Length: 607
Image (cartoon, rainbow, N blue to C red; front, side, top):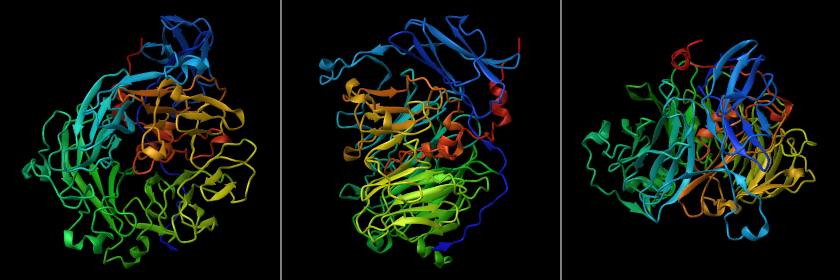
């Protein structure tokens, strides 16, 4: 194994995270209303909450436990607010929010099964054409008000990006144009310039229109031919140019455009450069956001998986989009980087694995440091699935679990910082599915599954469970263990089935993968929401938990490892996002901060 890593043992400085409001949500129950809101990573031990219904206080004392509550006297016509207090001081009070009403099961197959009504959110959407399908989604605070908006892709030729509020308003639509690949916009949603509002960055090309309807007109796009149609083979682009563009989150207006690095290159050199001459390998596009402790976050765009791997990072400071570093497995000045060839996954993970305060990219069987230098390569090769988190609680730091394709490596667990292989189960088969999560409270650490091995504990020992490698973990029911989502169904592990989304016309994306558009902690307390397309493609459906919990935890979006992997969740093959701490072991003390200018903008005058 090639290893150039060093792990910093000193605690990094508090990390800058996005300012969020309390994200309160109210759900109609059979009797009463379920309320849930965010505890934040900046809350202290004295932070409590008062609840209001229609302007009147309904809690005698401030709630200092879990951030959820059932109001037995509430109805679907009520409006609720949460007030934040510390000791005797009132710190803040949210705007009033309406109740999500219960809706009857609407799928024809569920109407005769006495399926109970359920409170969930439907967001109307409008497809560009009948042929377009709803694809991956992400979230970001596009207007700086502390609430998340949804950004999602319309898969088709050409692809589109839409931004919508949770209240159902479409903010803008970006048209990918004829020179982008379907499902290959590789869009990132994050506050890149530190102004408290998220931007959107993605792969573009000649003919792309921004959210105002105008063709791109900055950087190399200022002088290109917007009527050109680049050459394709088997539907994939085999000709340059491609761009990277940054768009204003609130309007979709183009802010900056630069050339995509690395380019595909000359057509007659494609097979030698990328491994084929029909665009499959060169069309393997990935992207990520890397937090940098001493500067603005970086956006990273990569090309290649099976042979050459190359990527470039870019910084947007609100005025200029500049390239910061590049990494290339074929770099003649770094012959040691040849060990990184063919090590990429169909997806990637991001985290501060070496504890230096800045993020690294885990790209399959290799890792790239925050400064663009190679961190390590295990040489175990490409794979389809992975998990990054504190999977082995008795081993320091983060671990990375991976299924491998080909050779004989099967599945492996490694130290995410150093690449040291902690254990592996050799298999000659292509391990197409794998996940690792703590599902059973009687088993310490993550249970590890794959399509080619029995279920294993976090140390690689076989265990007597029957979890499917084709499911995906989710935190939903209120205990500290994960539940399992398969298609639109959530199973509660030992607790049985929780609900079936198809009863309410929820559907899936990505054909045989049966993915959700997004699984993330979007509203309410620390439990995760699920975003699905409705079967008729006319709405996004958001399911959130209605189950009470006694566990108080800050929102998962204030855990850096979790937040960054929500940002990349829909890039390539969708992978779950995990906290950077052992969740079943309790909440750690958060070490985050906000930018002073962002705090000042949200400060409210004291009475």
